[in-house]
Image 1 (tube, rainbow, N blue to C red):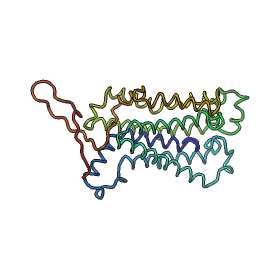
Image 2: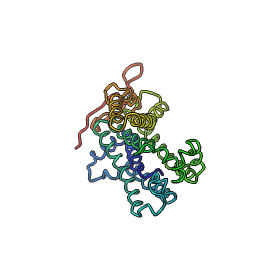
Image 3: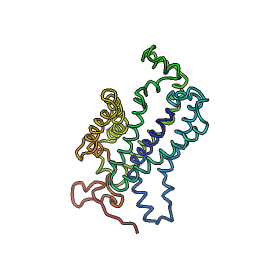
Image 4: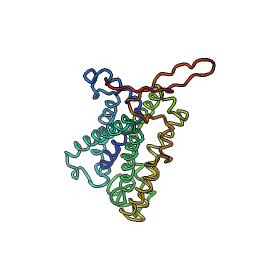
Amino acid sequence: MIPVQAAPLWAYGIGATFAVAAGRQLQWWERSVRGEGVRTRSRAANPYLALTVLHAALLLAPTGVYLLWQNPAWATMQVARDHDGVWAGFALFHVGSVVVGDLLGFLAARLFVLVGAGYWGYLQAVAGYFLLFFTLIHGWDGSGYRRLLSADPRAYAGWSADGAVNGVLGFATSGTFLALLVFGTAVIGTMLLAEIGWLVEGWRLPGAAADLKVPRLLAVVIAGAGVYVLPFAGALGASVLVRLLGWWLGLGLFAAAAGAVLLPARSPVRRLYGLVGVPDGHWLVEPEEAKPGPGPGPGPGPGSGVRTSRPG
């Protein structure tokens, strides 16, 4: 339901976000599969992986193909003027790229979650959403937002003469915008319900109480800001730097700033990540159920102990 240039990037970010949101469940699934033996339950039957792919195949891809047929110019960011400018096989490529991008994002983040590098799994989501927003805001020639907010080539060509306000108003009253509202309710609504639901589900598992440092509602807000607001702000800042300094110097300066914000062990983003209660340990380290403490006073809370399990 977004232009084809950005759709695989969004799919990658969604897949990675799904994996991080279900990180604790993925670790428990891995333990159960290893405990039973790989022949009794295939890893491909993982329900979180299956639901992630279904979201891409049943919602992301079909809505994108619909908009590609309804408005080829908008769906290609004004590269194609009409149906004659779109090769028929491009629709097939679009569907495949969305599903594959979603799957790759999930598997990449899942790998980091399972080996105890959950924060790097989260950075997969940040990278996907940053590339998505940068494509929509800046694009390949600095006119990404104008291409996005133009319903047709004529409206895109008239931005300079009509002004930004008239351009946005014209897009907001178009049939394409109405279709985006309808599809966005289904696609984004389902996406958010899954992400929040899986986070809440994971917080109920043993060990989560010790990892969750803030109330659940605040944790959801922090997680949303980290996945959506931070990449959007980064894409906006990168676009400004590229416009002022050029591609090489602007992107170089932005990369240095992003590394300073995201990578150090004491970075503010890493600290916020640690508040949300997403697991950051290896799947072989299994939380134990809490046991009541002896004598008066409260015993140790959930997740107070861990035991190391090895695949048999």
